[in-house]
Image (cartoon, rainbow, N blue to C red; front, side):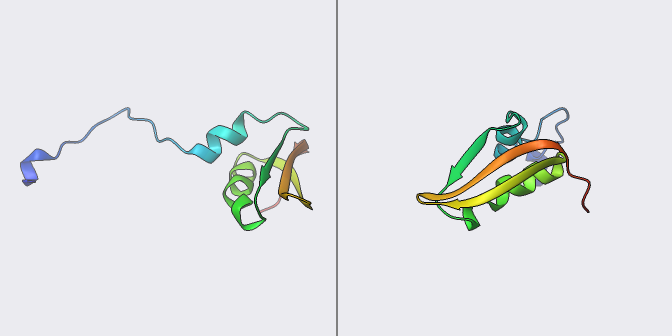
Length: 74
């Protein structure tokens, strides 16, 4: 591809699956993952939005819940 084939585009939204998913969670909603490691992207998305959460190992994997309040930790 030649350099003149590139163009700057404006107004193209960035899509982040985990931010999209976690932004739709209400207090008490949960997501099940096969293991704790697989939950890290969702946990980071919750934190970046200031949401509190809790996680727990369950018989069929690892589950995270959105909790009441805001996370003020750095």
